[in-house]
Image (cartoon, rainbow, N blue to C red; front, side):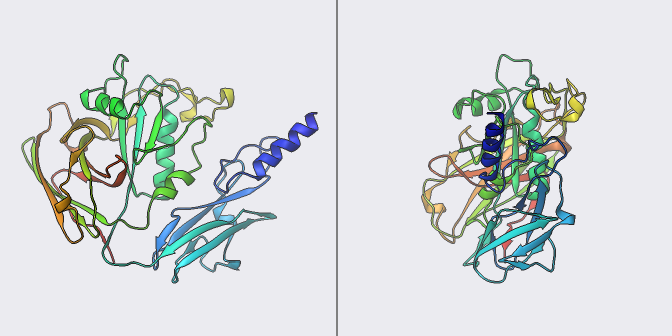
Length: 358
């Protein structure tokens, strides 16, 4: 029976998607039994490059020791490839005697005007939550592969001793009906489960980062003492209806001890050396306040058509307890179903020009 169970376990591993999380083989820790391949993009525009990465089943990065193949041919540029034709490219990797399962990359021709696309990564967390450090670990791994991500740290819920709970964070929690911690939402509609304790498999968020967007976001702001005033502009390269804009004030690099259950026990990985609590833990883009309704404000359809633009002026007094240098504005554009279509992080007192893709 034990031999049969081992066979079933190996069979299940072999049928996982190519981005599946690695795990120690049944032969014991430290034994490599397969490799997997990932890319920083799954769809790109012709002329843009994508970067490939190879890891073994123990989650060791073996990129520098691997060879990469594009449609069966060895890629002379190693783990970097720039496609010059539209269509689907099949990439594989070889590491010693191991060969990865194939991964498909879709390339598109740029038509009309295109803007940079970013996904929204919402981390529902709490300083009291020992299971929550995995969400930050995932985010940090993600931006190392593709930085087209806007992060919101939403602390809660009310009734706990987290110092960063406020009416805006609780309002988002209530609006999105979040009950479990951590909860990771991508673009407000896709839940990224943390039940498997994996923090290296980035296939889900990477699949949501598009080659481009037809919604461009720009903003300009100026500080006068602790008062920031500015304008957010949205440019549209095709017709849209039922859009909303949400704007949140966040404070980055807040330091506060974080509970941590990731010490290697119970099948959990070791994070931050298993320290509990993690002393001096850095919290990213913590939601502090809002400049719109919690769930966003309507954008008139007449101002979201091809070749039109929408402008929203704002003014905000940064509270004295916030570090102005770490205070930012997060802009999210959502469709009629509340799914984020594009997002951008804005540093105050700067010009953030329209990001057009040539």
